[in-house]
Structures are given as structure tokens and as C-alpha cells.
Length: 95
Image 1: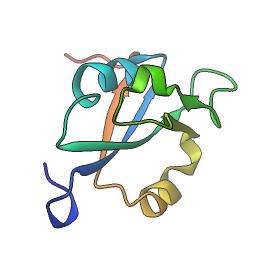
Image 2: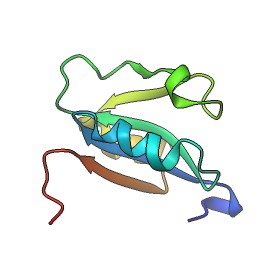
Image 3: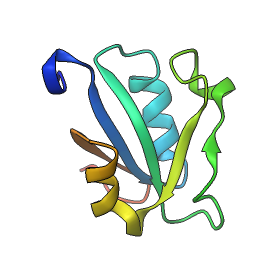
């Protein structure tokens, strides 16, 4: 999906327990159609306020990717100009 004005779609990955990082690494990391604006966190204590490291995020994210507390979601959608939210929880059945 293209974002505003044909730019890559801005994505926020809402997830927990590492599934969010897996989804990023397997689909979004090198995908020019998307720009991941951040992750939200709920299950790993103390992870909000940290950054997914640039070394793992790849060359498209030289400053890494910020991790936010999920309670901030409504403000994040507006402030980060998010086009899509990806639901990436490991404890939800996919069946």
C-alpha cells in the first residue's frame, strides 16, 4: 500500500513478546513500500521508551525504531502520521 502522495505507507506495529520484531524482520525491514514509524509494547516490562537497534533494523533505519507504550496508541496515530497499524501479537490464535 502506498502512503500519502505515493510515499511509502507509514506503519505502526502493535505487538508483544517478540512477534512484532519478527513481523518487522520478515516483511517490513527491506520493503520499500513501507516505513515503520514505531512499535508498541505491552508484555515486556520496561521496553517502552527504548529503541529497536539500528543494527537489527537495517540500513533504512539508521537511528533504530522507537518503541512506545501501547496506551499512547491514539496519539501515536496522529503524531506519527500512521497510515496502517499491524497487529502482531504472539499469544493470539491465527486460526
